[in-house]
Length: 245
Image (cartoon, rainbow, N blue to C red; front, side):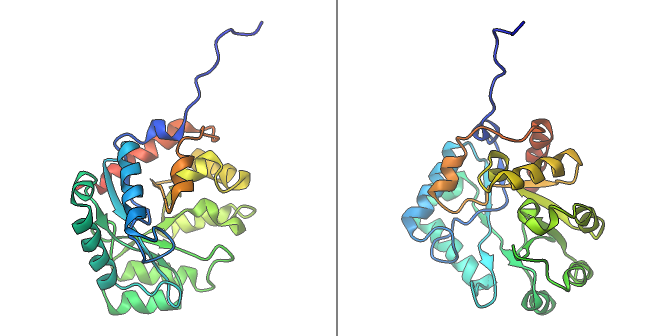
């Protein structure tokens, strides 16, 4: 006998009320995120409508691609605050950076202070093609320098999908994991969504981020969740409250 009642669907936007976002690309003209002041404004307005409580935006720092520095990032942050004071205030707009782990990064954190999410928590990423050969040396040296690495979107590194034990090795090496909310609705494809679900099931995820760059990302918040482990996702979203100030 079939039930006449259908299970209520859960949409990503249903989970974002009061969310503290620790990964986005709001600052215009500084990386592959917002290109214009109007796009920065659009993203902030969209986050407000989605119920976001606070935002730490994280422009890329990648040598010879996005040659950002602490000075260029904080300067652009100040400019956005001046252009959109009400939105910046209501979202408690703060700034850090998303650093690509490579040789240049290893030299950078040895010579100057990084822009962190909070205290010594620093957002890092790696190439989507392959992990750097010196990955674990970088992670070790980063911690020796006093930082706690938060690895951005581990579910998107396809080279780990068939070698899932590497995720646990990364965790054991001291990495915290930040999944993209867009991964939970299939934005990056089925394989990434499955990896996200497995990371959640195995309790490997610490935080979440929007990683929003543009309109298409914002529109995806209206999609239905495709992961099964929604309770774990809700707990991860709550963990982001750690970054409130």
